[in-house]
Image (cartoon, rainbow, N blue to C red; front, side, top):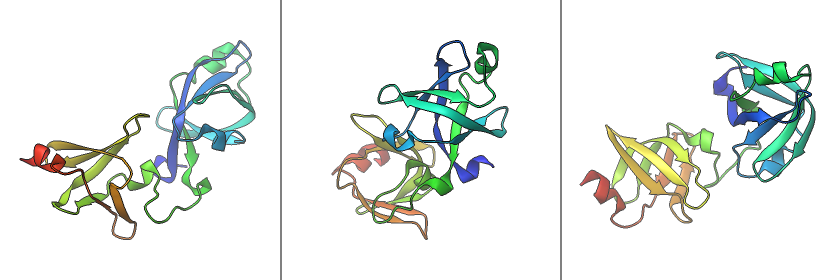
Length: 175
């Protein structure tokens, strides 16, 4: 499995006890969707290594205690700390309309209703209070709040994200 076929689920944040359990930070919108995972891929030295899950318990809205098969002590669990965790993108239901997964639209050309092509989407900054689209135009960064009504169309065939940015925002960045 390679990263291009996966999406970033989160990372191993810390140990959870002394018997090999770890605390998995879930960097997703709804952690409850992942409460019954049976396997994950962990990035160990640029290789995605599969690990089967013996148990998973959601602890709060972002963390879960996970017991991985074959990780039975603190020493082996420590080797996984701060490692990124991935899942196959094939398990995600296909979205349509203006709904999208953050990883899905990376690299899409961003077309604004007023300004046309304003650059390439490099990152969706998933802040709870104010999520942002980070768009790169040449060497300039453009940040557009991902609020209701901004995304007008997700053109998956042409890899384009059509938006209507707040009045005057793009002018602030591009002069």
